[in-house]
Length: 254
Image (cartoon, rainbow, N blue to C red):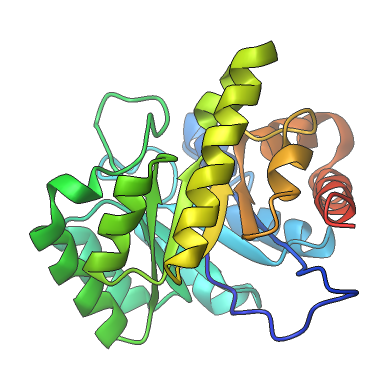
């Protein structure tokens, strides 16, 4: 999300930010076609719980977040806004109007339930270089959502991205030794990207059960978590769920 570089370390340990994705509050609102629950109220509750930023994904089919939500989030929530978007002319134009703190370019397929993997940056460098340049020229920080793959990190640096956000879905889905292997793959990719000068974020599928190992990776400075926290809010409230998650990820850095 790009809330800004940390200038200060605590006891030699770099802190870590928590971005909260409020897409699925809008999904619930849209199910009845009314105004409730309100994504803006959810963002403010997340802030009360200690969120460092808010993420929202404006999809082509507007299945959850809508244009009006993006403008309202920017105007009414005093936290950095991360605009998740496909690399299309339509979304570029909207991002330049909304002027979020940062934009995260993600792959998008109309029929997918959720983002299924990272961008193939290496396969579309020319197009992505243009989108990244236009967003940065407008003063926005730019993140690319990629798999834990060093070739994609290299390509991200070449196209001019400020940040890479690593897709953690496969790590979260695996169990036992397979999960350990995925974590090691993620660790290597994060360290490689950091050495290239890219700011490293991570997200997708993280829960109370999986977040600490990722938060413990010293080069990761931000986690973006959505579906789990919105679902958990049904049982414990959004602010308490965010507060618990923030405590866990900060504890993993000690």
